[in-house]
Length: 509
Image 1 (tube, helix red, strand yellow):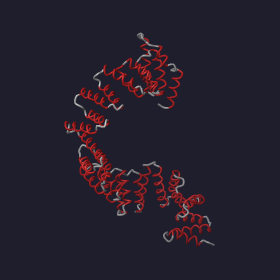
Image 2 (cartoon, helix red, strand yellow):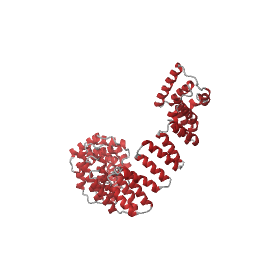
Image 3 (tube, helix red, strand yellow):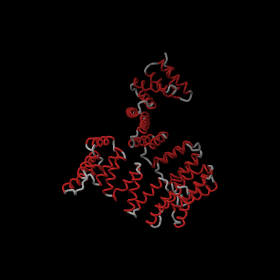
Image 4 (cartoon, one colour):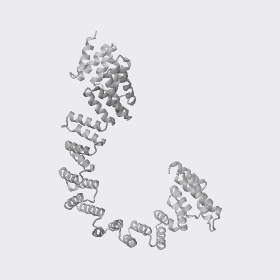
């Protein structure tokens, strides 16, 4: 219930239901309801239930007050009003209403009354209800189970077992849940050996119950761990990993959980994982565990091999493809051509994924395949509105259009990119350069370029762009100063910067 609804219900309580208990006591409704009263009660009660289901709680409570005026002893009305009172004021304030509901219809409202009484600290009152219900419904498992749970809570394990025996007699052959319950009672009481005997006896009668066998194995493993018995633990873990009754995810979890205690090294863990792979040759889960294991231990090439195997089973798994791309980047033995072929493959499988579109476009551009680059970029731009991916695509698209001398298209792409990230230095630099070489607004270009060198004063590319814009504006001295700085940071590795340096130097007076 939201805060607003709490306030509404609180106001109703203060102004309408302030004398709630007094009204309940004043109107005993010992007489039979008239037909008119019964009709009104049914109408208001139905409307209250409907309002409650629609979360209109203030309205529901108001309608229940009207019901209370007609028949304050109606069990359903008392129970529903108790729900609101408990929400607002706690269990103790709701208890009188629950008691009244129980007194009016014991079989329907005993459970909630008993539980609320017990949770309110009125243990004797709760037990009186349960004992009364045991006499009224001696074969009702729900009554006996609640009695048993309370006895367990109070650490009266001998009495709890006696109640549990009654439940088993009522239901016939004990179910697996009953056996587990008995095991837990014995274990809580400190009778660990007897608790285990309960499971063993059940397994003797039900040898095909795989879940119970798995539970029994886990208990034995915990016992070995408690006594630091690694030899027994090793044997039990092997048994657990080979069991057909234990699910694969649970096996992998247990292997990871117990390997440090059993002092398994990476080789041993891998051998056990490979055994699991043989058991589950088509399960991605075990291959993922193998991949994680190899990567964790620095075996990038081996992890990459596992990833490629996984990809044959699920070639459209984009998350896996991205993982493989990361592994290829970290594997020094992988050649650029292998990376390129993987990009081609991934784009062919996932042509509408914008990330693979971006990498595919870069690859086409490196091959100087302009038409393919444009086609891939335009398709990728249509398939995504994700800001960061779109920014990269627009930046590349603008650079390509500028190279093709389509300056207006390039500038439009740069403008859209800067709306996504106004201070992206790469876009600002390329935008400024495009303005400079296309005869565009040099003042605008200078401001953009100035931002880049303020942010990265040692970047030779940004310094070169700024120097060339200054040169085009006739600011020869400043142009020479910045092109020299660009030369200083670039050295002899940038022929374009050297060419600009020569031109700016020759233009000096």
